[in-house]
Length: 383
Image (tube, rainbow, N blue to C red; front, side):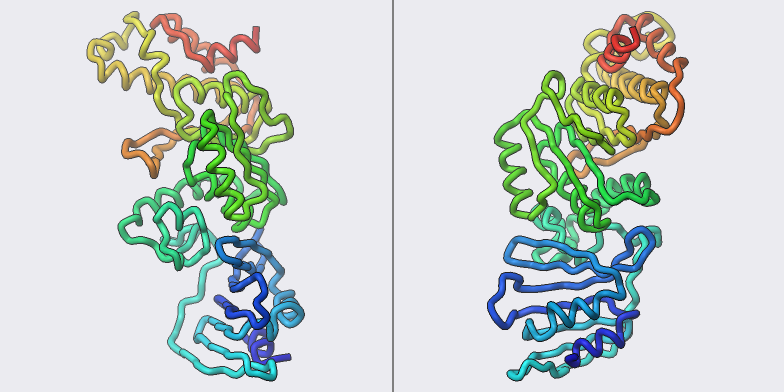
């Protein structure tokens, strides 16, 4: 065993990071970075292999790292940096293949947290190789947060935290997600990173959008990132045949107007367990609503009418979901690409269907003379 291999065994419990660079034989992987992670409550190390813009990841149990290092990495790279809780050690490979320690920094370093519930610790941490955050300008090329984009960094983490709340306690090895109206939002790529890299799950995500050029561009990006389980498809949710295998989660972030209703109806028809929806452009009720009751005072001014119509739309959507067996949270969600504050409907299928809220929604629709797409689609199935 080399000096690095010996030190790796000695410092394994306190290892924060291991970086190997400058390959001896010009191999494809120009750098390998090893970091501690926690998966389903157990200690692992994640190896990140970098080859140009391509990055791939591999997770190994904590106790398996020394054997893997000795078998696959020892002596292969000219430079090695080993960071522990208490010091940083740098090694250089000598001509005979052994290593010598060329520098030590014994300044005290804080141990990293491996859980996601510590105060002020984000799930997507500074220093991680998250290509989408680099392309978005949130991270620099060396994965530092761009200070002027710190709010955006927090907003993206907020979305991932909401997803993590739903999935963190589930003992799953795979996940399938459909993203409706994905556009060129990098949240889809961040979502894939969270499941495939952070959680080490077999991940399949399909993004649907109407624009062929956007879909082609997103597929190019997914290929460049090495995200084999992520693909994008040109599709109209209102009429096209969609994915027909089991689905764990539906995402609709700014699917415009009634496209949100069709996506939600698709989720209901397939019994999808998790739904994350941020509706926008709720024009349908606003174009139809008439005076007819206690809300008439709010219909006399265009801006108030528009806001009331938007609230009615999302209230009806929540009512439909609840009576179809979902627990629904209505959350204020500040989208990282749009300045207005939006509502997110976060739903999980975990209870028996009902009928009371649907009846209330239909009574409102009759009283004020409007039709609402999700309400109508649900009525057609129940007829």
